[in-house]
Length: 181
Image (cartoon, rainbow, N blue to C red; front, top):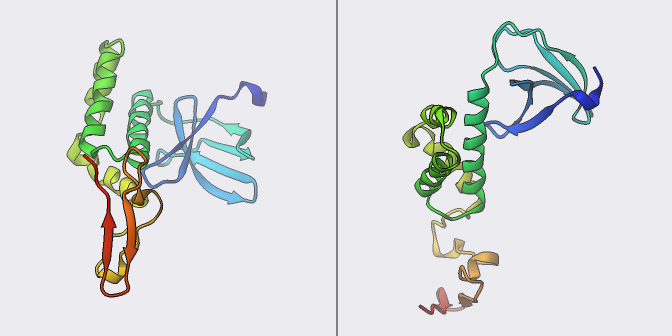
């Protein structure tokens, strides 16, 4: 089989590692040696494997002992979009979850879309993953006044105007902020 004919996609799993998707099946990295990666089917006891060189498939042994689950791949895509938004935006997590579900319901809603919405985990079951994604980009909350360090994007408003005017620590901590409503 020629490499140009192989349709592979790389997706991030819930642990932040890469998975490979090929023909509706998900593979996880089994072993890495330099630029070579050896992938195995993510379903336990399935003998299917793929070898890649610089993320280009070189060998495919697609003898799966189970059927593919395209619905789970679609659910994973929706959850991945939610996680990316949690990382890049400061929109409340519950709002992101609801907005992504609304997007699904309005885009040519049919039986497949309804089934997809029904298979997406409930907010309480996936909120911890999304909050952990958000937490990675936010600064750690200080425990003492001396640990307060405000710089970069945190010195500006959401419109990009200066917010923190001065941070004086000569005689006790004094933060001078400008807030225009």
